[in-house]
Image (tube, rainbow, N blue to C red; front, side, top):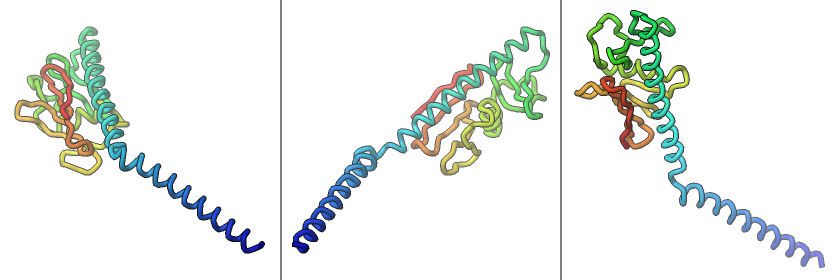
Length: 171
């Protein structure tokens, strides 16, 4: 009688083990095999949040510029943490070189980097001038458009045109 109880107990334990293993394999299948782009989806959402933040930041910087000029303020810069963000004549950010009043577009990739850092503030994603893992990098195109490239999302790009103030993206 005791041997039949032991056999039943072993069979029950084996059945529970197989059942648990099937559940674990099912969850693994659903998350990693059927939905391999879960991480990719999160990176996409983060990219669009950064795009929206930059677009809104450029818009708010432009409103600040317009408001200052309505108050007859002669300054074409916005100073924060001892850094001045310079604007072109249309009121869009162009970098931090406040000595050149005729400048209308960013002049270097470093200007694009400082625009990103200034406009997005302290919660910005990491950005560099060179390609780094898990970050963005900035460069200036030949036609003076700032390009912010996501290294996590198959090199998706956010473009900023300082002449028009337009912020748009490419995937």
